[in-house]
Length: 208
Length: 270
Length: 144
Image 1 (cartoon, one colour):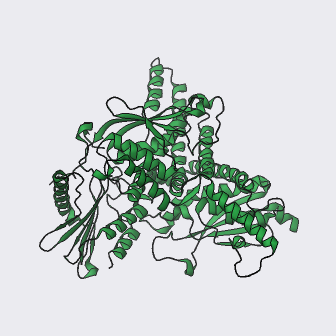
Image 2 (cartoon, chains in turn yellow, red, purple):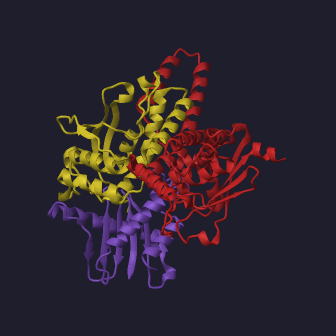
Image 3 (tube, helix red, strand yellow):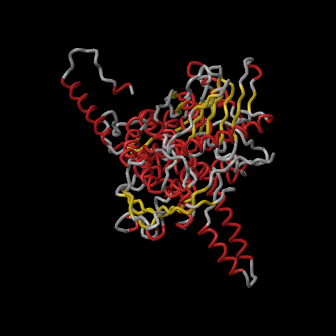
């Protein structure tokens, strides 16, 4: 992609003052979930994802790093499309800073798609990276990993890919990765989102 | 679901009817109270399986090529190559857009297609067998698995399973009562928005892998309900959409006929 | 009367359709319109950034000239849907929303086709939305 780097300070110009309060963001998410969402049982979602992961573990002969990569790129492909569903349902404009972005991800995006609101925390001092803490996660509820997998597999890695893809479509180049996961015996499930750069909006190529 | 329709017509209900209605209502309330996610998230997950399956195929082939390369190589520099390669696969994420993967699958050789289809079928069958468990323990008053014959199982697929997976039931069920069932879905939901500019034949061919997952689901459900895998054969054909179900816009041009054959039943009739 | 519809993604114009009084001559994704598309993009881009500079959160929505009214919808993913109409149409927000929905249905949810036209500008692949169903559905929304 022929995109040029900008600094996080030259954040996009499109910004709506109504987004400033996190209460509004929460409301947008809740309203969309309540009124504009067809719902299915989370169990079905869990077991379907489980079938995918277990097939991948078999295909890659328990090389869990490869499974992680595959889940990530699967998520990326979903993310770059799913972002449009999200924007259509919420009509949320570009966020004017990364803090707002984090609120939108947690209180709107996760609320609407998975009906959870992971806590936003662990901000870096420069406010360009934060963590999402998952107390619940419909991808992995009731899942237990075998010993070998619990060392290397990031079971819910598809989420990282989805976020990566979706954020890129709103011009945010980020690294997204799991730091720890209760499935691995860690005390909590933590996902890190780190902003690398804000991609500049392109102007259409002007050959003539 | 015809069986759950509350009978409001009759003014007087027998105690049994009242009790039954109470149980059904309770069940629905309980279902309502279960954790939910967005149906669209689920659809994305279902639909991304097909390109993913091709991506796996690509990766496995790459690995094969690489391992044959490294085993042949006796050059002293081969160690470096090895390290370089593993570093690449660690840090750089391979990205091929979904539509390209789907096109690759369409143009793949038979062996790759078979492997990819098998993968999708297996994922489907995993979903199916777990769904059986889930639905058995759901205490749905409309379902009784104890006395379920083949027709009952197929009906269960047409109604409960399809409803859960695709938000709609199978449109039409035909059977010869000797182990052959045709399940017609005139608007198979995952593919409804799929279209190509090419002619229809190409479109149908490209979309075919998407039907491996539900075929697997059907197989998974039936085997987990006790039908021996060897007696089961499942396939599909595209069918024309009946006149009264056709829509002017936004509909996939064909319906899908899921064909289930349970051999045991066929033989027992002979 | 609707004069034309333009859709831009974050790289380029991905759809344009011109409507004329005589419908039979309506033109889709025409080559001749390429330079015009760039002009429109440039104009809207300038006005858009100007309006947000005047007041934060102040989004460009419609723009009226002597003979035209321009209606625009912008998303955070930098998708622009732009309709040129005559002055009888005061606002077309609903129509724009419906066209966005069609974009979702026929482009975003059609996994057989690209979502990002730039990256998939292969040999055969078009850089525009070519789906006949999309075009028909758009015509339907624009009441033609």
